[in-house]
Image (tube, rainbow, N blue to C red; front, side, top):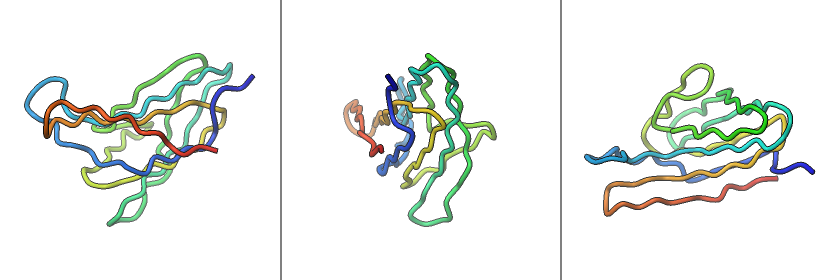
Length: 119
């Protein structure tokens, strides 16, 4: 049985400021690959005010989970998502499960977990 989907969209990206206490504010993309084949994920970052960034390649080995902190450089080229509004469109070669979350320190510690659209 395959677990997950190959196509995901997370429409509400907006990196929060780090704040002045640990853990620092951030967004993260958690990807679980429960299958027997390594996942290669092609991520496109869409913006409200600039051209998209395509072909950010993320890899998740078979039977593993990786958390990608989106306030740090990611992918094979160490792409840094800029602060401001963005969305993620992700295409995987094998079915995976993804969750997108935000730790926002602007007001009382708040962590939001966001569902993505998948097909």
